[in-house]
Length: 222
View 1 (cartoon, rainbow, N blue to C red):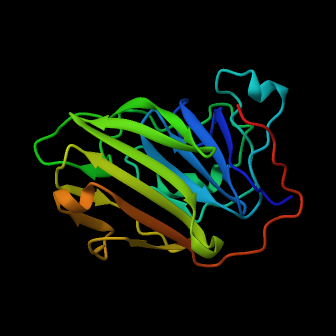
View 2 (view 1 turned 30 degrees about the horizontal axis):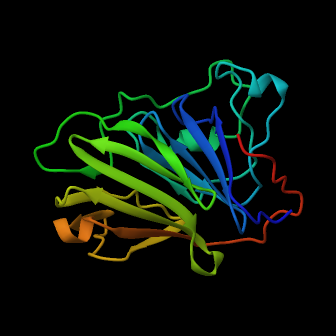
């Protein structure tokens, strides 16, 4: 089934803290967003959206949701090793691995601001969740949609009050990325002026796309 409208689940996801979202986007792109750490964890399209059973939906995090996809973008984190991503779909692990708020490599850096980001909630804009969080005294809003031509995802950010920021993307051989403003260095670093950071887009494109699976299940919002 082709996804025609956003589907949002607040659920337990592998490779994320217990405060995670799984979102399906029109055009059959999917992502995991971690409210515990206020960051995109990974995005995928092959293999379909998450699947669960009655035990999963009523659990305390064991087991996590099941999906058969392989992410084309995986954010760097200090609490997961690169090889861990190979096990994201393994839901029968006796102890599911999580990344926690102890990770110290939050991708948005603001000079003079230390400490962890704080999740403030989300709102729906035409069905799409816009996540709201704070970095120090600065509010960040992040809205993710399917990119142009359905080739990946586009993350729309706004930062207020005005402040220069440094954004660290994770180089990944399965995807490429671009910014609506500024220049991304070879190591994934994007430096933006205060004016640029007020509103900007980051687009992540899958390098080797495949046709969406025919057995997708759209599900219902939670």
